[in-house]
Length: 247
Ligand code: NAI
Image 1 (cartoon, rainbow, N blue to C red):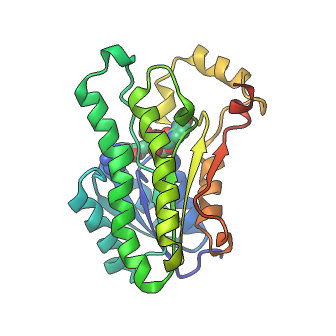
Image 2 (tube, rainbow, N blue to C red):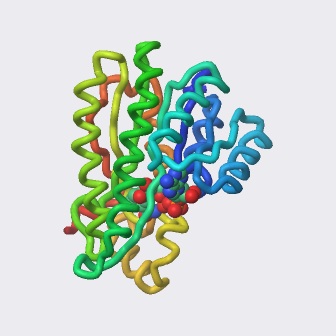
């Protein structure tokens, strides 16, 4: 049990990659606070973990609100006595070509994907510093390198790299590592919105010959969340089946 007696806060854990990650961390011994702004989804993930013999609690939380982010970190400590791991996984898309993008589309995506990561990280690190240990991992994306129709999303995922590196510099002295991952095309509700033929075309362009599954990414989160990855910080690790090698 890699994470025996540890406690994790996973945001956006009601679906997709976050759900797979919450389950995998729990299978590896962590107590998991399953945070999502969709309360029913959070409850379903937490119930599935408990049914499988793990430890989890659901929490309704909108990471873009500073008070709710703070509450999520505090609640993890209240429920499980500690917070060792923060997985900043919650993210949204509001796609549009740049000339047509509304201020609402721009601000919503910045609020969740960028500000949400900062608020949750700050709230969790305040507790982690006290115990001199922490693992923070955030979801960037290969869209950080640019993607048509995603000026807002791409900007946030690129900004996370600077944020991650800066937090890694500031918080290394507290025993906290801060890393980001850049998934490629992963099959979740986020990508289910893309038409079937476009998805098949995308898969053909991936050297590994397939799109990713949520567990492909959950396993990377687990690796970076484990005590053993103590010498990796400020890194961006790409997990895209080789997709970006061909760009
Ligand atoms: P998803 O849409 O399947 O699940 C995201 C979850 O986050 C949902 O349960 C949603 O309710 C929750 N959520 C959204 N906004 C929230 C907020 N403000 N507060 C709390 N919870 C919130 O998404 P998916 O595909 O699992 O993506 C997870 C992360 O991975 C996101 O950050 C996404 O940008 C990133 N990513 C996904 C890729 C993909 O191909 N699916 C590729 C690269 C990165």
